[in-house]
Image (cartoon, rainbow, N blue to C red; front, side, top):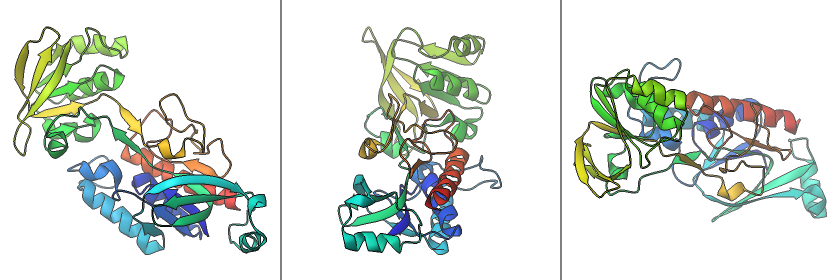
Length: 320
């Protein structure tokens, strides 16, 4: 039995692992895909304090190796079920084993099963992250990091003095367009409706930018480029099609939290994000959440790492 089980090996999960093992706890990290999360798709990280420039893959690899070298057990196994079992539900033998556990708590045991094994922990940290909602167009995945991005604040500086497009109509898309207009030669803002859903003050600010062009009632239908994005095809509501030559496309049509597995373990908001404050405590004692799957305003690399540290320390306090 482990003191902590962490689901997810992104920046939040691995940061939690580092803080957990440094606090003297036994830590298991489970990851069903690859360590690092979304950051591995970022060509260069330039906004993490103390790191002037590093690829997202290098950052993820360093974080993984640090957690592993400190003593965290990291298994590339996808969690398929999670349950909370009260100690009263244990057999006499299991209860005796639990009494010997270093965690010091007998409130409950969390059981996480994968396709290969079943693991028990005294505390559970949910760090599954969120995935960007994709357009679903051919070549989108291949061009991610080569002209296609889902984070303007992360990658916008790479398009200084270039022509870019933003796809979306919410506040995130409007903020992305406003941010990019400070650096890019021209910014197209493509939205499928005739009006934006985001804040009006952002729309007003964008209308004052001479290098911003609104393209409404239109959708992106194709991505142009071999190995590097060169342009996009768009179609308006009347069926008219045209091609825009752009160096970058920033897709801002929302994110989807990877929380389906744990929907019975904690309260969630209407979008599926796990509800927790800055202390990362969920509605279930012993369950903590860190990173992009938590209800929060800002989702960045730094906030994910911060969540991981807080969640681990709160779990240590819970374990006693």
